[in-house]
Image (cartoon, rainbow, N blue to C red; front, side, top):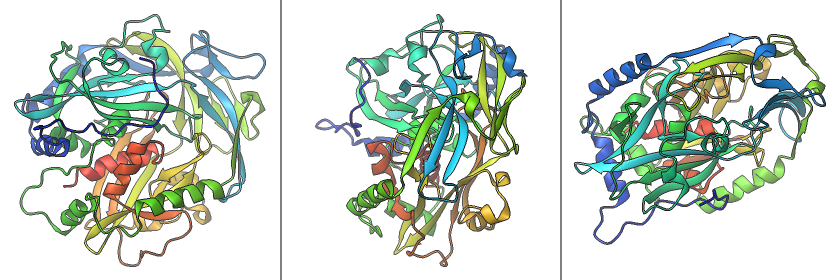
Length: 479
């Protein structure tokens, strides 16, 4: 079956007599120390995978990345196969925001990848098959990825390497049960119109053989690992956001915040704005923000210069393009070189939340990113790399996030972004309760959404940015 670019599919309806999916997910979320293996055993397994293969990623001059060359007509960085991706130039013009025009390098990868997680019940508890996968830009190199994380070039074996393991469960009808299936965007700052098919597929009557780089974990174990820094990779986080929202297990009685979060997951919750009104508001935002994003030759980028080492912005801000040489003993190809985007300074992606009439709401921002298909998606309240801005350029609500006291911060961890294309692109992800000074009345481009509404928009596909989807997954870990 070929990949479809049609509308997303929601969770499959339960057959007669079958336990509803939300109840099965809640049971899995309650199994915080695992069933097939304990979390302590997982820790030992992950450490063993770190030492089982040779993993290295070293910086090399951009002029020395093997297999890549500079196109004579454009100055673009392209692979000798003509596949995978290229580094090109992008000119963005917009009618809104502080910057009406800017230029930047961008990754053009004109193919839809597959991010897929297999799940299956063991001893009555739903488990998810996760993979210890090395990505050259991640720190640490090895993190927990979906069962399948592959571009079309990967799974069609353009690299002449080994087949992608378990890809067959996501490309053909084999009697499995589809739990989630939607097209989602990737980072619109650094990718040009890149999308992935996010899938969760349940094995019903089939056992599979899997090697030592894979393990089965409950949802509760995954939620626990999300509280740690840089264990669950970005692709896993976006796929997990497509699940129906269920809470993590809570020790003891739920507190006020957790009760408000539980109410927020109910479709009938008292939302400040109905879903049809939000959809209309989102369409209004798309119409109000005129954006023209045009690919241009890399050599024609004003404000950027290329050296033997890297492509850098003249003022040193935001990011640069660098080269790496990679070894990975358990990948389909065990050694290669490639360009990566390296951001300047740590990132911050924060979601301010507040209770209204007993229902938790999250504050989202309709944010323009030049590489998005529609140029605008709903992002976190704050998403930036603070060191790149002067004091008078700081994003709205940044002061409230940075000034949040320990008692108001509900989630706070560092997570890596897409390590296959970005080098050291970590974000500090924060969920913090706002005080009563943040009311229903908001600046243009901002809206309050319940957890139920966030989940509904994710399953529709391409409404929430990849950073916002990570924060939705993190929100689900809070009870």
